[in-house]
Image (cartoon, rainbow, N blue to C red; front, side, top):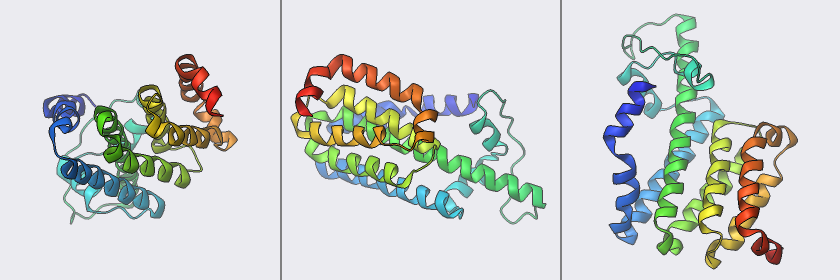
Length: 219
């Protein structure tokens, strides 16, 4: 992932796609968030059906990304790019299975990235919450309603909720909905709660530390 990290740094994603959103019009901001929302929904459908579309195939075939699944599921393993494969190249059964695993891993990564981006854009534009919050809230509610098992997407969305709570719970216009989303996390199935317990415990500790009295008065 050294190459990926270098590429992301050079793209200046935070500067261009997050910080600069403060200066774009409400219509443009809504269009950006709408595009990210549609991408998240598309990737979630692909993961549910196991039928991956041109987005993941473009990245896989265009970048020669093989063995991505192993690197994503096991961060300690070293990712080594392999020679580029062509879409019409005849593949063995093992290669096809490996490519499908890569497509699934890539969809998880792309979806998690989009959720992160929506979260950061929402926080960056906290002075325009009526514009950014409805879509952000819908995305998180949809992720939690679709995810009854521990996945990288549910994990990322959980982190995003606590980020939003720590930065925005003092804003009256989103307080109630943020607390409702927090309740969705507290109602996870036992297996999901167990898997995500380090994230949930750390997030709840910081939330109570900052907003304990506010939460108590809201319940």
